[in-house]
Image 1: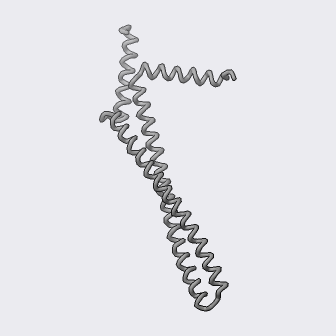
Image 2: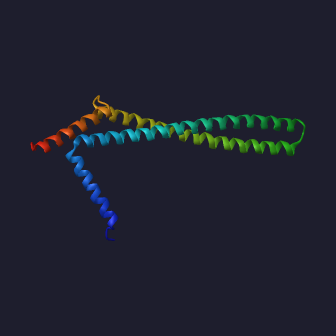
Image 3: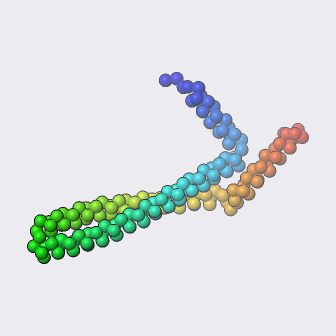
Length: 161
């Protein structure tokens, strides 16, 4: 299938961006740093969501544990009163609740593994960002970039290039 005009436009814009970044390595570095910061912010937001989800799962597990205890006690009372049918129904309900608990526990374990992986990614990005910034802030780098751009513009105007 032949490339559409949109594909050609996208390729042209990408080529122009790459040429600009090659001609302006400071801008390229700033763009990479910004990308790292955006990625880190997204991962931190996802981390917060996972923590909230884990808190909700733990709350559900505690509630389920209370229900299991309550229904276990009801089953014992029904057995003591020789209400075999009621006791059997209560025991089946306890088993259903326990299965729900196992499912929630499994979900919490999976979430914990995902959380650890996310923490490793965040740590790696922090190391990358600190090694790239070399102690300067984004604002300082941006000011340096703008100053270089203005200097180049002055040289062009003065015919020094």
